[in-house]
Image (cartoon, rainbow, N blue to C red; front, side, top):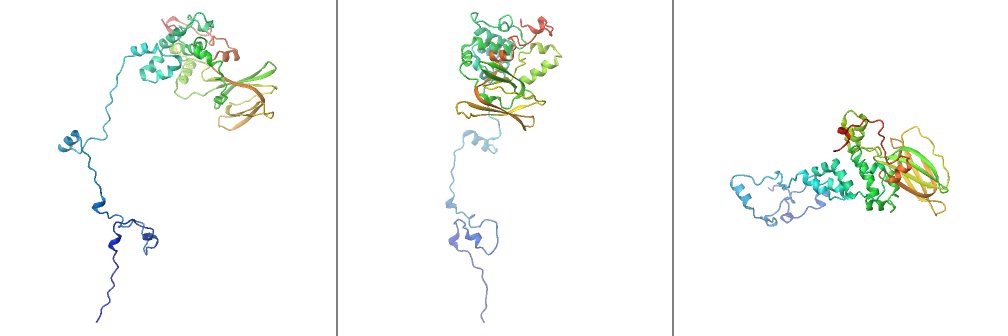
Length: 335
């Protein structure tokens, strides 16, 4: 009597060591989401071991029962901590365009730049009696600590030749720098058969920044520290956008705070001049209105440190009034 026995077919030995194919999954009678066991069987001949020699310290650590060198240990960094008096001596040789680089070296160099001694020495290094200066930038007025930094920066545009050359090199023509600034005031004037429209703009201060802390200190005036604030500058972050055109345009009055959302410069219809579109938006970023100037003869931007800026706003070089402040020798003068 013959018996019929069903035997499951075994996998061929020839499949060991090969890569799985799409037929192992697409044509499989059973649905399986895991990889084939064939791909997990690797012969010892296919494994290549690379042995790297261990250092003497690692061998001693492992021999003592340790697990090897600690990987989370902080690296040992050696540095030299120089006294701040040395940095004051080095600061005497710093050029005006390298002040920011010098301040970013370490905390002590930043402290040097924030001192009145640094700005006084910088002013004395480039002072020239043969150059005519406003009364605010004379040596007798530069001993006052309040607003010393802004006064020295503005005086360098009379005394320092590279800064004076910037005023005539056309570096104030990048009008796209005014995007994102708040519109303070606007006015227009007649100039040589054209009309020049001026927009006074101001950049918002970041909370906790040096200009923001200085502005808060000047508003409170609850201590003598505001009289010794060398960063005091009412025009910090301010610019004037000047647009010169041939036609008179009426600038409407706005009852809300506006910001420069964008400024677009294209060719005019005559293809000989430019067309400027000044887009103004509110604090939410929504566009409120567009001021179109066509055609435009000239576009320039004046920063607060240029002498022409104060000529446009009608303010003399003595930008802060001393009538409403009670001065004392101990609080405002650097002996």
